[in-house]
Each structure stands twice: as C-alpha cells, then as structure tokens.
Amino acid sequence: MDKETSPKSPEFKLEDPLGSALRVLRGIFLAPRKFYLNFPAAGPVKEPAIFALLVGLVSGLLSTLLLAFTNIPGAEIGLAGGLLRNAAFALLSPVAVAVGAVLYLAVLKTFVGDVADFRQLYRMLAYASGAMVFSWVPFLGAFFFAYATFVLMAIGIRSVYRTTFLTAMITALVGFVPLALAYTWITAASAGVVAG
Image 1: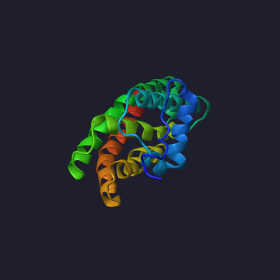
Image 2: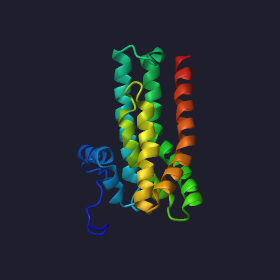
Image 3: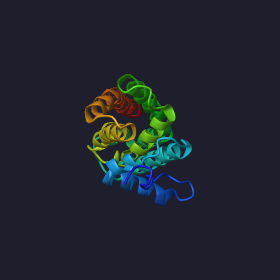
Image 4: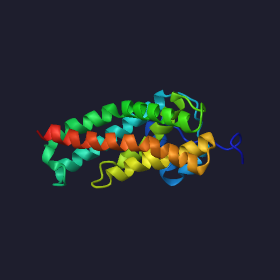
C-alpha cells in the first residue's frame, strides 16, 4: 500500500481531545514508523500546539502529584515550587516545540536541503513531544525526552523526507544535542531557582 492509499496518521482533534490524543500517543509509542510513514507533514499547527500544551499539562499535573505524595529526589523544591516549575513547563511546551522546530529546520536544510518548512517540523516535533507525557516518572524523564527529540525525530525525518538511515540519524543527533543540553540546563536551573 503506498502513501496515497494508506490511512493518514491519527492527529489531535479539538472535537475529540481525549480520544484523539490517546490515538496519537498509541501511534508514537506502539507504531512510530507507521505513524510517520503516513504522517501528513503539511497541515495546521494549532492542533499540534494544543496537543503539546495538553501533554505538558498532564505531565505537570502528574509530576506535582508525585511531589506531593512522595519523597523522591527533587522533592526538596516543595509542592509550591513543583507546581510553579510544572506550570511553567506546561505553558511553555508549545514554545519549546517551536524552538526545537527551528533548530531541526536549520539542521535539515544543512544535511538534506530545502525539503521542509517550519510548520512541517513543528507538527512533527509537537506529536513527538507526546512522549513527554511520561517525563514525570522519576529517573526516566531524560529517556522520554531522548525518545521524543532523537528517536522519533530520526524516524520522522527518515519517513517523511525519505532520507537514508544515516542521514536521518545524523540530522536527528545534531538537532538533539543542543536540545538535550538546554533541557538538562533548564531542568537543573529550575530546580535550583525554585528551591531557593
């Protein structure tokens, strides 16, 4: 079945937020290659931005609940500090996706050529950011960040732009490294600032 006749990947819909979000999450976790092979790169950014915000809100809420009821590393920032940090994480999620999309666009233009635009990469990364719904899990947040910004983006770049495996890996890695450094710094800095 070719791309023209195969069903499109599930997308977030405002008419069915919970069901469509679960379908997107199922796609990126259980069949990421199929998700991106059938992914319509062109399309609106409003729904993917709201999806990223929703993922940030859910992850932030679960992280705050974890801080409230456990004594895990990072709990020293307290419930109020955790709530503040998680609210900022949630509300800035669509902005973080935009920054990542700009970075991936520059890298993709360098290694592949002028094959993409900002909207396409925003949509791709916004749906990949669905993996961050589990970023609240202690000691595994960095894994889900890497899955979203490296693994899923490599699969997406290879599938959507029909690059070679090596080109997709290099492109994703070059985009991932500065994002990972920024994520690490922001996480550490926010814990320090909030803790006092």
